[in-house]
Image (cartoon, rainbow, N blue to C red):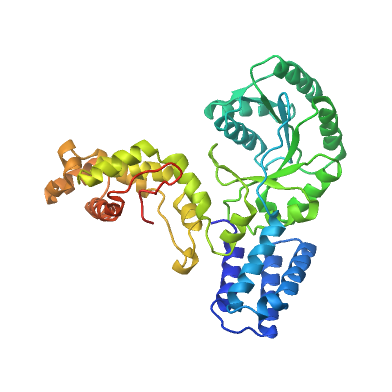
Length: 441
C-alpha cells in the first residue's frame, strides 16, 4: 500500500472525526495538529505542510463546517480536497508536439530507476498506438547502453545505438535517425551522477540545445524524501525538469517526495512506478492518490486494471459456463493468473475502500503459483469434476505438486467458494464500458 505509514496515521485521525454530530473549534485544531505532525514525520517539506494546514484550517473554521449536518465528514472532505490540490488537482499526460515527432528526455541522478523508467514509458506509449524507440546517452556507467538494450528487448521495445563517443554526438545522430525513420517518439536515457554537480547540468543543457525535447522528465526516487525535493528544485532551476516521474512508490516510503515536489516546484507529477515490471508504470491521478492515502480506496484505477487484464470475450464465455454450471478448476486457474496480472494482492487491497479497518493484512504472493502446481498435478477428469478427489487422490496430488494435503484441501475449498461467489454474475451481460470483475474481493 502506498505511503502506508502516513496513510495509517491520517486514517486514525479521520476516524476520530467521522460520524460526529458536533465539532468544537478545539477538536478541529487538535485534529489539525495531529495531521501536521503526521505530514512532518512523513518527510513532507515544512513550508508545504504549513501552507496546507493554513488552507485546511481556514475552511474548517468557516461556515462550511458549522452549517454542515455532518461536520466530521465535512472536515474529511476538506482534507481530501486540499490534499488533492497539493498533489496537483488533475491528472496530466505527456506533452506531445502539435506536429511531427516527439522527443522525450529523461534525466535524474543514479539509482532512481531512470533506465527502467525509460523502457516503461516507451512500452506505455506503444500501448497507446505510438511507435517509440529508446536511446542511451550514458557513456560513463559501465554497460549502461547494453543495460537499456536488454531491458528494451524484454519489454518488446525498440532500442537504437547511434554512432559516436560523446553524449552530445550520440544525441545529434539519434535525432537525425528519428527524422528518417518510421518511429514517432524518441526517448533519451541520459547519464546520471551520484549527486547534483555543474558538470552534469552543463552536459544536460548542451543535449537539450541539440535535441530540442518536447518534454524533459525528471525521474525521482520516492524513498529519498527531502533529498528528492532538493534534487527537483536543482533541476527545475536550470530548466531541466518540465515534469516528474516518481519511482518506488510501492515501497514502504514516508511519501514526503510525492506530497512536496509539485508544491515546491510547480511542476506536475505525471507517472508513478509501482513495481519492477515494465508494465508497472501508472498515470498519476492526484484525486485518486488523495483518496487512497485517506483510506477511501482507488476503485477507478482498480477497474482500469481489470479492464486491461480481463478479456471481455473470455468473461462472456465464463458467464456462459457459470450459467450451465460448467466452471472447472482449469477456469479457476486461468482466472487466478489474470487476477495476478493486475498487481500484487497488497496493491489491489490498497485500492479498496476501508481496508485499513481489516488490520495489518498479510498476503502470500506464492499462493497462486502453488495453486497452479496443484491443479497441474491433477488428472483431466479431476480438474473437470473435483468431487471425485478422495483422500488417496489428495495424497497423490500433494506428492506430485510438492505440497501438502492441507494445501490441496485449501485449494478445493477456495474453488468451492469461488463457484458460490461467481453465481452472482449469472445472467448478467458484459457491456462495453461496464465490465464486472469475476471476483468478489
